[in-house]
Image 1 (spheres, one colour):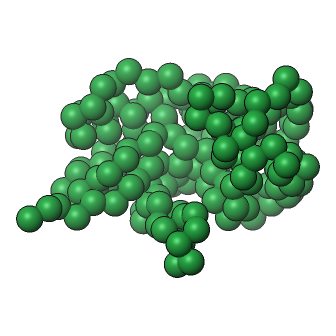
Image 2 (tube, helix red, strand yellow):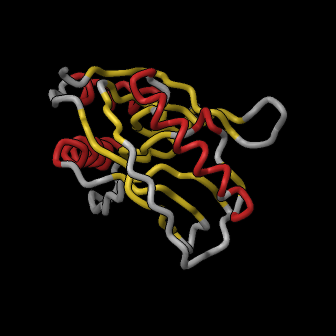
Length: 178
């Protein structure tokens, strides 16, 4: 008998209304770069804090218990410029370094490493994935737009009903102090 698992990650969602103008600019930038790779659907734009991979129900509950105890202020940051993870074929938009953002990502990653029995080594590069299977380029595009986050969540990658791609379902959400 196999355990049922879900593919999960902690993230900051861009869909809150107070980020609408910045999100629109990010979507517009993504559309101008569409020929470079397979664009991420607009509704899937987010900042990954910690990728968890396949997680069973007991581990999910433990991860949520850790998230329940996190007490950090809201995160105010901004986008920077495009970049790439060439080996993975990822085109992304960078996020300005921020102590609270880094602390949140580190706390979640360390908890995940302990609960899931994985390496605690982690090089957090805050970014929003714009396209996958992207062709490399030397041309970077700058886009400086403010972003504020009052919540973070744990998300599941759910295969699309048509069999092409995934959508992200928020399973639980926590408030960052205002």
